[in-house]
Structure formats: structure tokens, C-alpha cells
Picture 1 (tube, rainbow, N blue to C red):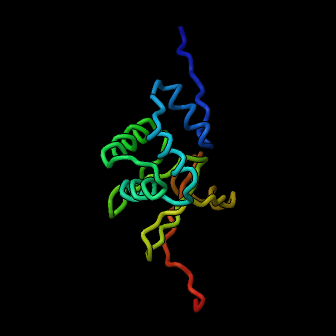
Picture 2 (cartoon, helix red, strand yellow):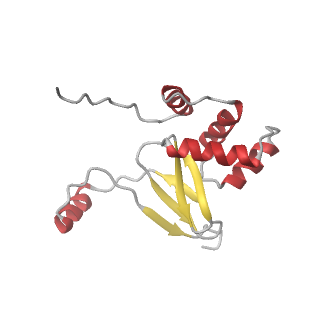
Picture 3 (spheres, rainbow, N blue to C red):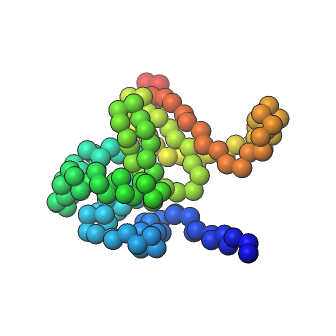
Length: 148
């Protein structure tokens, strides 16, 4: 009997992330919801400490351990993105395929959606012999100042 392939809807919003938690049988606790809401509001990747600090500044009391445990559970199920960074792990929401801008001034990692021209993708395929189906680019730079 052929194996059935189950199509999983991509996570593109906070609602999709919450739905995926429920689909996987994960409890959507108050703390887990706080973390997911923060990650979908933030336009950057955050460390566990930054998540803890921001939630507590918003008056949403949550302990260090709870933050770490929830981040681990959510990232291990691919509900949020976890990036290994020189300063430790950074967490962000998952969206469609995207690239990252690494700000060398602030150590922030920002999501950016960039589409390469078809001729660049074909060139990469020719050089490698690999058919490209998706890609992610890492950009590195410094914040623009009014002088630059």
C-alpha cells in the first residue's frame, strides 16, 4: 500500500503558529501565547533574554525557565525559527522563505524577502549541477547614518 503524504500548511501568521501547536497536541499556555505574539510583532530575531525582558516590560510576567523551555519546544517543532549566532541563539517567527540581514553594529538579524533574477539562479545551477528549489541569502552590513 503506498504511503500517504500529508500536506502541512505553512506557518505564515500568528494564527497559523497557534493552529500548528494545537495540531501537534501542544498546550497553548498563556506564556507560550505571549512568546508567539511577541515574535510575530517583532521585525527582528531576539535572544531568549531579550524575549524575557520585553515580555516583563509589557507586564506579562514570565520566568526565565519558562521562556527557555517554550522557545526550545516551539523551535524543535519548527513553529519558530532558531538561528545559531555568535552571541548565542536568536529566535524569530517563521514565514515564507526569506533571507537575513545581519547588522554588525547592533548584532540584530532582520528578515528580508529578496527574489533573485532567474539568470542568477540558472548560473548557480550550471556551476553546481543542482536544481535550485529554494534559497536563503545572508547579508552583512552596518546601519546607515546620515553621513553615509
